[in-house]
Image: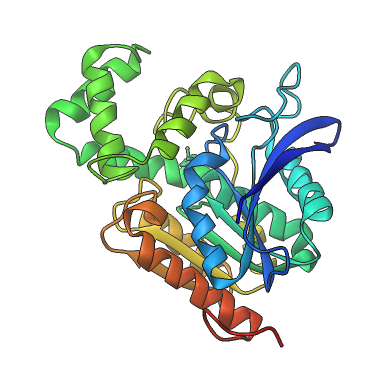
Length: 301
Ligand code: PHE
């Protein structure tokens, strides 16, 4: 079946969406991309969840990917992204949804749940984070653990703001191939999302010049104190080599009572590509458990 694609007007701006899976679905899954400022493309492997009978919604956050770029920067905030997610759910979601957020999308999913959990069946974070300063400190530790010439290049040229220096660029590529995606050949969907992140204003404004230099507006966000208010079934996912480290995932897990946590042993930040089969079956088993139904092929009751 062909995916459905289009634009919806969300809080005054046209936002791109794409929906995979049957319209007579057992439930709807809404996915949230990271960056902040990248695009839905790198999440498209999650179309696989349609095999288990789910409708899977992707969208580009305001100013990102194919969505409209508003003038100025006041729409580029976690609070606005929460309201966009709620508006998308109301327009396309068919009631209560499962929410899966990757990276900053995981932070967004947590913020959404803190405000709107009555609209959720479940919550899943993948390489997500609650506490940006801690996640940033953890990435500094990962840099320290890189080969000395890479760590040195990142520290020296990064400190001087020489983000185009060839040694810095080379070290950044090594960081990405170790902690962002370990596959020898990257999925074109991931490359596309990173490229779009560089081309749109949101990434630099909210995140910073690259994955491990968090100088943008999200840099001080810390949702830990509100995590215990989340009572929907929650699954905390991440890779063993994730740039958003296992210690960051553990913070979410301990903060949300009754949450479950799974770490993918051969993955970094994109287990939905790096260990695609294991990832999808882990998510599908969790969703089926929440929905109180069996696995693939089950009939609706
Ligand atoms: N840049 C990460 C993403 O892909 C988000 C992030 C922000 C991670 C801050 C760690 C610290 O969404």
